[in-house]
Image 1: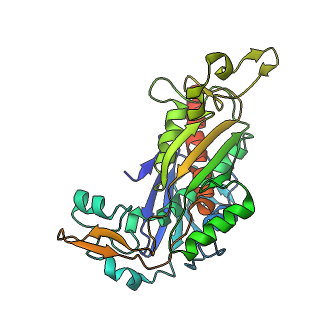
Image 2: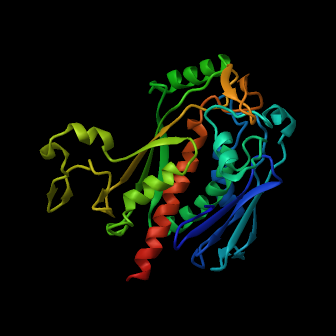
Image 3: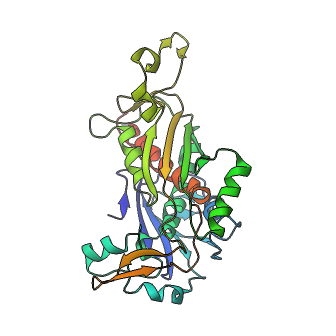
Amino acid sequence: MNTFGNNFRVTTFGESHGRALGAVIDGCPPSIPLEESDIQQLLDRRRPGMSPLSSPRKEEDRAGILSGVFEGKTTGMPIAIIVRNSDTRSADYEQLRTVFRPGHADFTYQEKYGIRDHRGGGRSSGRETVGRVAAGAVAMKLLAMHGITVAGRILAVHGKTEATAIEHEILAAKEAGDSVGGIAEIVAQGCPPGLGDPVFGKLDAMIAGAMMGIGAVKGVEIGDGFTAAGKMGSHNNDQMTAEGFLSNHAGGILGGISTGQEIVVRIAVKPTPSIAKKQKTRDVNGNAVEISVGGRHDPCILPRIIPVAESMLALVLADCWLEQEKNR
């Protein structure tokens, strides 16, 4: 499934080492101000090669709008955005043609399709998120017109929460040929009450699905999430007065519908599976082998996953906003 959304529909395309990646957005309303620079700002935040904490792959990730925009405004027609690859170095992955990388989708793609792109994982690569971020930038422009903003931050990396310690932890993992995971938080502000639809169109369910659709995400919580399981109801309920809610343990969603408070989402991000340390695996013929993954990889996905998660939350909210508008 390569299409996301019901009203604000996004189809992403492209592979890690293909000629290009991108997105086609259908259902975006007309007259929204949109320039390539709006998309570029968000793409630049997920670009590789921007610091010692990320993959050294050097990609400009320049966004090109092919359709759906005229004289700086959306037309209501499909918006096609393309980002061309330029620094692939596919030869670095030749050893993986017949070997499955632990922690990757190599094995499962082979089992499902009987064929896979071994060059950086092809469609299963984290680079696939380029299209999501490009589309997310458009969704954010739509939401901004209605006073809704989305922003994310790193909460912890390998148990560390202070910025200097986080950076040290990532660099230490990189030096050791290993990787680390962590936790990120994404918050939407300005969201009105009423978004989301019971019973199977719940806003929190849609957000959870969107976040779990990011390859490196292994857990999602809304509001207090798992912490709520250890509380009494009297402490967990968000009591109300004439002035509004007294707390936000629910993360801005009750009964699958937004309350008008901040929507708070946290995601657990696994360590990058491509590591230089030797690991046991198997080849396509079932033979046991050892592997040390070469190429260029992030020692920690957290710094570059923030704009991806922001984009997915924006896509969900844009989709729900348009659904609400249809029913007015």
